[in-house]
Amino acid sequence: MTDLPAPKPWFVYLVRAANGALYCGISNDPVRRFASHQSGKGARFFLSSPAVALVYTEQCASKGEALRQERLIKKLKKSAKECLAASGSLI
Image 1 (cartoon, rainbow, N blue to C red):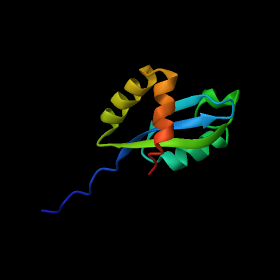
Image 2 (tube, one colour):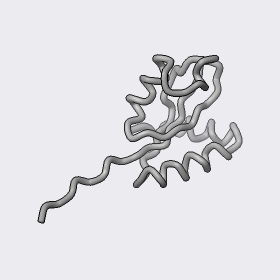
Image 3 (spheres, helix red, strand yellow):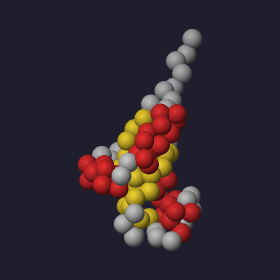
């Protein structure tokens, strides 16, 4: 019997837009996803103000957990999201 490879981790992340807004999303490769945001693909959010920095990532055990965490972060006040961004938790 062979061991199955560990599932690829999922992340919830925050990206800073040029206008100062924070965008929250999930990905199994947040660095690649940020690059797609910078290139104008991936989210309509960045059509009005380009993505400038990946400011926060948090590893989750599964896609479902990442989605739950994303929902929680999106409910936070801007000041609480700024605290996450300031924490500097990056992969």
